Image (tube, rainbow, N blue to C red; front, side, top):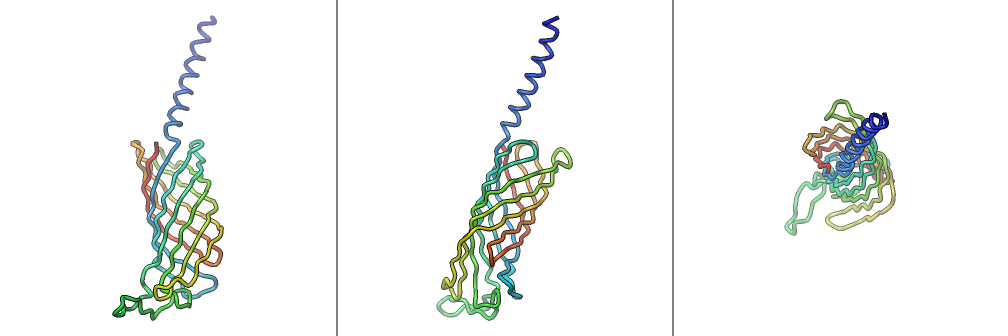
Length: 195
């Protein structure tokens, strides 16, 4: 009788150990995401569109729903405001970002965020990220830095993710970064690998 009870207990223990081992084998994810969007500054009616971003991140998955994310984001505005180049290769700006004589904006962010995901099917899921970020942004006028500002702000992202069985995944995301007077909203496409 004791052997009959022991066999199911051992079987259940081994299967739960195998499930835990499988989940532990895929607790890590690294990824990269390219985004394009717009930047807004304070109460300006003339915002900078053509902001390009590259976001690199690492996720530690606690379970199938929750993960902790560490990320590094780098971004720069396009040269839309640059209407011509003079003989010294300087931008001749006729348009202005943010109603100022700004030719270019650059920023970087260090991100810590919580990620929650909801599976729709075996491979499809919707996700959201909420966190904080340390930022530094610079503004340039005719190639000369006119502002260099640092601080802390909000980081938000929501999107759709497709996970293949080989560990690769792709995602489409809407991202919002608040840097006090400067904030960006962008649409991104990314790829990641879980292991």
